[in-house]
Amino acid sequence: MKLISIKKIALSLVCFLVFSVLSVQAENALDNIEKNKVIRIGIPTDYPPYGFVGTDLQPQGLDVEMAQYIADKMKVRVELIPVISANRIPYLQTKKADLIISTLGKTPEREKVLDFSIAYAPFFQGVFAPKTTTIKSFSDLVGKSVAVTRGAMEDQELSKLTPPGVNMKRFEDNNATIAAFVSGQTDAVGMGGAVAVNIIKQNPKLGAEYKLLIKNSPCFIGIAKGEEELRLKVNAIINEAKKSGEIDKLSKKWLARSAGELPD
Image 1 (cartoon, rainbow, N blue to C red):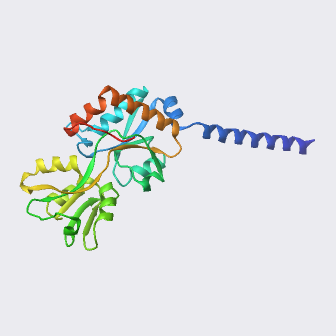
Image 2 (cartoon, one colour):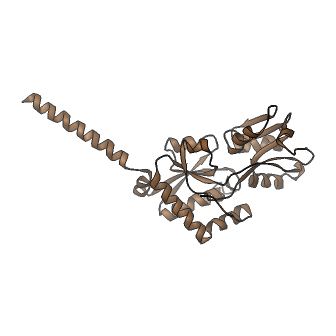
Image 3 (tube, rainbow, N blue to C red):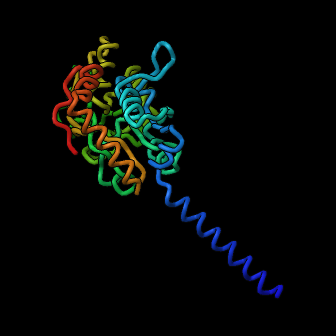
């Protein structure tokens, strides 16, 4: 009798554990967001005009406003999590963030480890250098140093386009990349067009200008693999924002240009 009772208890415990595991697995990211009434969104704080810290020490920029817009539409509180290029995808994979809104470009390599929303903002990467520096093709970069942010789109794409002999200097965040170029540590810099325009305006003595197009790369929102319900929810919000003119409004406010045609 005692042996039968022990077996029954053991079986009950196994069933309980299996049920608990299945229940946890059944709860997806969207369920948790709606239940907890909070969404954690990774945003940049070192990449103006998409994300930076204002004079009031609060995050601001296009990506920050987009994060707030999505939270408002979902009727939840937003928890903004500062990220940099090197850690934004790991933050998503380790569930430290529900979404990444941080000038994230879509590449085949990234699609293997995360999912993407439809595009929400325009973006392009280019090579910028002083007007006195002759750069008409990627071969002209041979023998020159180019500052890039490690792991960022411009780092990945420029590495594919440049021939041997180009000195790629990689820095851990965008502020360090910008500082290296502005202080003359490198001959050129690879970065987003909107960011470069701000740097050129703020540092007129540099005499810097656009030299080469690295890639047209609209911004997408990063979502963890398998979170299809959350992805569809975000896409619906972006589509609504496109139709209402909110996407164009944000683009004109922060980039001084219309969003134009953005890909799905």
